[in-house]
Length: 253
Ligand code: PEP
Image (cartoon, rainbow, N blue to C red; front, side, top):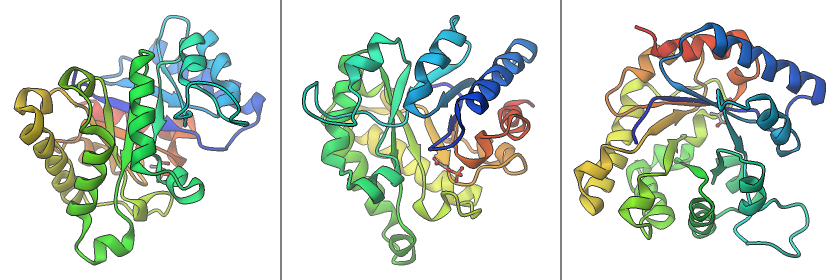
């Protein structure tokens, strides 16, 4: 179901004490403030169980930053969908640009991961987006179309409705550069129209599409106000409670 979401991707940051502190702060914040969106976090996998135990009433969604495309076996360093399901994680990021850039993740692999996650009842947050060169060459619509189709369009309509998409232009991630609200809206509307063309408008209207790329307290509200933007995937600004809270409040009128 389409909903407003603010999700924090902690990447490879924070030791266990710092992680626990931020998780507590988030819980306190959620208890004391009526957020107009779902609040999710993707801490390093080492801390997932700690988050799961702390958020026992599902106040905050708990996501892995990645998971294996394989079911189980000799894949050193990986974690599986079954493991995430067994700790009652909410879901996992799939295809983050840093996984694509440093670990060669392809959309074919993303497709397998999304399916495995769904089979285990997990919510995949499928990330896509163009590089700076692709944007400069005017290829952004085409790139995002190909990524979306390859990773998602083998799913049934019922499966697709359970996926969250995060459009994250690579040139805006961690760079301080943000896509303008109009640039982001253009791609979000494009993704929704691709889904509508293949699965019908009703399905397209049910899918949450998040924007990611240097979302900060001072630009969140304007980005979230775009008609096809249903929230944000937040990197750097998710690491400080004050900044993350102000971004969540981007959904307050
Ligand atoms: C991200 O890692 O998904 C991200 C959007 O990072 P940042 O907000 O730091 O650009």
